[in-house]
Length: 135
Length: 135
DNA sequence: GAATGCCATGCAACTCAATTGCAAAGGTTA
DNA sequence: TAACCTTTGCAATTGAGTTGCATGGCATTC
Ligand SMILES: [Mn+2]
Ligand SMILES: [Mn+2]
Ligand SMILES: [Zn+2]
Ligand SMILES: [Zn+2]
Image (cartoon, rainbow over all chains, first blue to last red; front, side):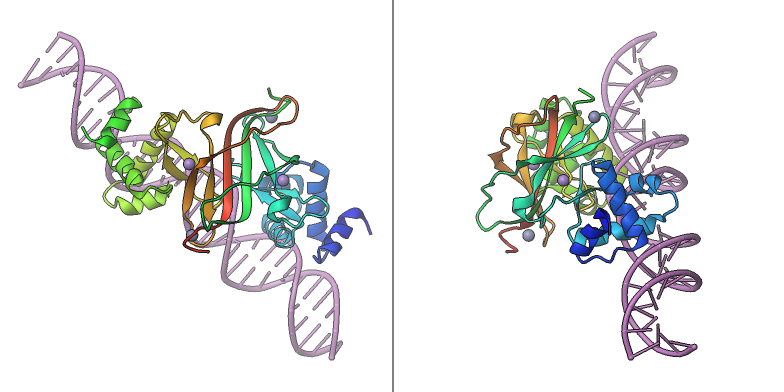
């Protein structure tokens, strides 16, 4: 069993043909990909099947989604041991020139003092600017 | 001249009828509003006119926009003296129960160490969870 | 005040990512 | 084999956002 299938099995997601293709694509690309990106990269696989795979992945914490403001949700593979809890969160960087979205795994999100009785569950932290290739 | 018109004049935006209505609505509500929210609150004003007002406001730093992941961009009036620079940025809080988006003006965004040669221009920082009324 | 020009507005149409309904295919279990 | 459940492909729909175009309103010039 290869690495891709192993990830799925560990996360209790049945490793079907489409799911393996989608996850392998995400692993290969290394950067966050939109549904359209994946659709273009897997021309023989139906969009809605890719879409449903991504939803399944997200529910089972195989990937996390990023709303980078580009109008298309992007998906990136969760790091080893990630449970998508607040302590697993990290910043994302969206390049306004090349539209690539990076996971900044090295920057943990600091403790944020919320107003009284506000409870944090998740976060979507996107920094926008120019990446190294574009600046 | 009332407060609403004053803001527009100061920001060099011609205070037309629709613009005054839209800005007054945002000021009244105090919380970030989507295009649809405003459309429902101003039933006699056309959606595209509201939309174009918001775009004009954003260009001229009358409001800032927030992508809270709800699928609808929200808009909030900029604080006095805001120039929408990185130092004016603040966190936003999106309540996953009541869908209200709050500006957390009291929490400045910390300096974030970006990878080499990455340049920050803007940011969209959204914390998701339950607000005081819903937790 | 008439003519001119510019910007704002309303309305309709369109774009496009996301989502859903449904039937066929595939796989699993009895 | 038969019954069942899940996944997949295809088509259609949704809904936020956006745009084209003609009209209206206002201001400036003649
Ligand atoms: Mn990430
Ligand atoms: Mn704000
Ligand atoms: Zn770039
Ligand atoms: Zn709430």
